[in-house]
Image 1 (tube, one colour):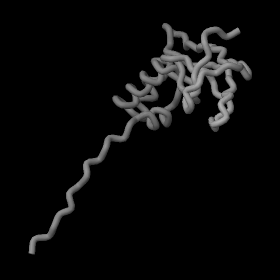
Image 2 (tube, one colour; image 1 turned 30 degrees about the vertical axis):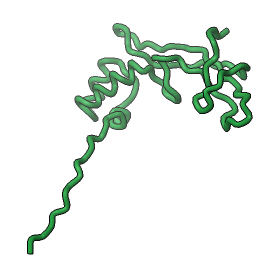
Image 3 (spheres, one colour; image 1 turned 180 degrees about the horizontal axis):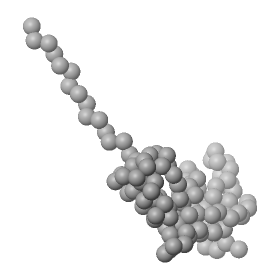
Length: 127
């Protein structure tokens, strides 16, 4: 099970040579018609054999589909970010339900980027 070359560890950039274990990940994707799409993906966990590396194991990543510690695909997250930017809290939650995206209104609010505040100039009193 599991095919393709092993990945490289993010810190030391060394290719992995030994598989530690395999497990199944479930990733929510964009809906297809009226159906939610769940991607069931078997990923491998590798050992890092470099002595100077602090991480002993790491999980392979699927480019364009997965991100570390995320339960939704990159496309679904991008759609949620667009809904959050346009509508925000409760209206965004209603649209999210119609689009069959996973998450609630607080997830939308977390995705919404806070715009940077301009630095104010210190006013100097005129004497």
